[in-house]
Length: 310
Length: 303
Image 1: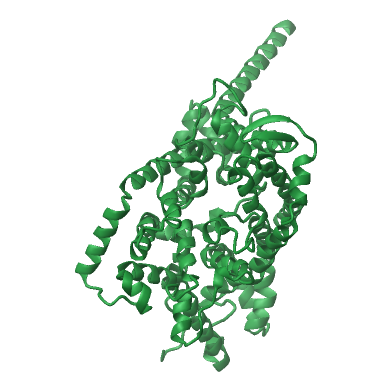
Image 2: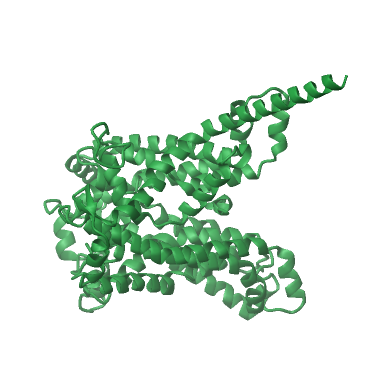
């Protein structure tokens, strides 16, 4: 009797174990394509980028270990500090020009009754235009003679043509204005959705307590949006710091390197140096990585906090 | 606006809109939105109008509107430019590219998100942590190593057996599956579905695959559509990876990028090329407008 029961349990255990094993195998088969692709396209190249940054390269062939040579070459490049400063300038301008407008537009759109859906469609148009077409469009809007839209308008007002992207003091701001124009609608929709989840009761309670529009904005809307805003702030810093395609397509890093960002320089090292800069490209990649990892860790900490609160 | 506006209480309320200051705020908002809309639209309108102009009109007259905007003129400008630009092949290439991206992205990331959310086999915790961490990692560090591996795929360096993927769509197709953002998007969508569906179906004798296709998939359709829109639109706008990879089989964004250094092209034709390149994304937008503008809620990804 007792022995029978034991074998019964053992049998059931074995059956359950084999079922679990089968489930595990099934699950892994389903997940395998993702794991393989992430390994080949993300995880392995990230590690190799770190390892190979310490190696001599001949074009795309790995030669021998060379210690910190690549790093020394990157850091002692006479333009390294200016490029780092350019990159920081991109980030600062993007925060000044581009951080708050999407929020304000979302708030206004949330309050408007007339022509609301019309506004939404019109405002979203820049986000629909493919990135490269929009960049070249703006390249010509900024054109330094009156063929360009902006100088044409200045000309109509009787003002002399301005250099725009050809002006080293304006070129970064010009690219940031383009990026704000291109990207604000997407962020705006994110805020808009979040605004709509603020409950009407809270606003009504505030109204009954005698809070005017500005008080309600500050005491009801602001707390509801704070978390998302902070997250977006860090995300924007991380993504603008990696800016590369816009200078590549709009200015070619010029005039005289005035719009060259670190990532754009990495592209130059990697693909436009006749194969001499491949090692430096990876070293620069590691440097960018180290700078941004600080923000990334902060982002995750923040994300956790924001989620815990809601 | 004779009658009073009534609205849901927000920053402004119905009672505010009866006061002078409330009305003022409301119409300032309205005016600002009009200005934002104009700023959003003018560059695009200018591009379209310039593409209809004559070259000498662009270079010497500097006016916003073209002189001749008859249907006839527009049609000739479109056909002239299309014949000159020879965009047919690159349009077909881009369609092929975007469909491949779409399939890989949905299948690979969809299954990945499903397993991480619902099946959770041994080791999936580690994979999930890696996915979350790679989502925020800068891509620059892997740009050159990736390129090197495409020369001898799937080997990381020099190898006699590797395949050279340059001038094929494989680097873009496979990269579409390396989208950690999409994996987390799908994982969150599946997280939102109760596990009791899975158990009930399993008791009824459904296999793991059956559960996925018959029960889960229809329920996450909105996320699939959202992701499809993203993938399709980005295939029509990304020029960077094609710039590294493609040479003869160009796609539309790369073709457009190369126009910038093409000195032989006329300005009006150049602008028409920008218009042509924007048509497919606008079609996608027109079809899915409600979903794009409305259902952004699912875009929020939790780590």
